[in-house]
Amino acid sequence: MQRPFALYDLRVTVERIEGRSVCGLQVGDYFELTESAKLRLPAGKHFCIYALSAVLPLLAAKQRQLSENDWMTRDTVAACPDVDERLIMRIERVNKRIMDSDTLT
Image 1 (cartoon, rainbow, N blue to C red):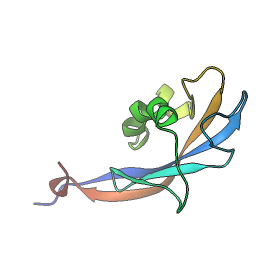
Image 2: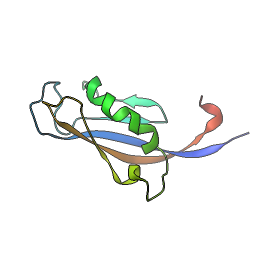
Image 3: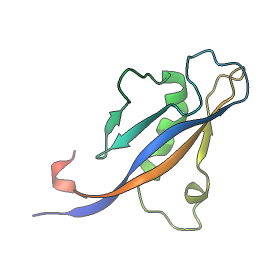
């Protein structure tokens, strides 16, 4: 029995760096979260695990349709925990995908 539901693919992009960049990321660097759980990076690029740790708890909620009054709908930025770097990332929905819950764990 199919159980379809919608999820958004996401793109997390470095929007600005207000301090000194120590992790090697630059404005415009990004990763994508697609098909529920696939993390994709452009060829030859990296993404700092500490910056990733800042957005990771937000991604599951950002993948789902939320109430327009939910703060997660309005807030789209997160900051890296490195206070000297002050790297700011934007979380965007890039594609709505219909998935089948029976194919996921």
